[in-house]
Amino acid sequence: MSENKENSQLLHLVFGGELTSLTGVTFRDLDDVDIVGIYPDYKSAEKAWRAKAQETVDNAHMRYFIVHLHRLLDPASDETRG
Image (cartoon, rainbow, N blue to C red; front, side, top):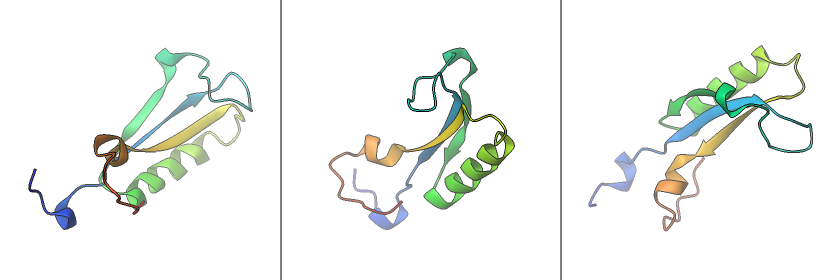
């Protein structure tokens, strides 16, 4: 791939759901995991994450996460941005 680094997307996945305990990251029901979306940069992913976290603030077992997909897609990259 000869794609210019400046034009490359830094994809981020936002997802979450209810956990079985407050200390782990095991979901209570994988069928109920909420895939919020895939975002082109950390800033927009964080905005979506904050909105979902705020919606579920009354349930301590609900957790949302941001996954840096760009790091999984190109693990050899030394990209350190968000």
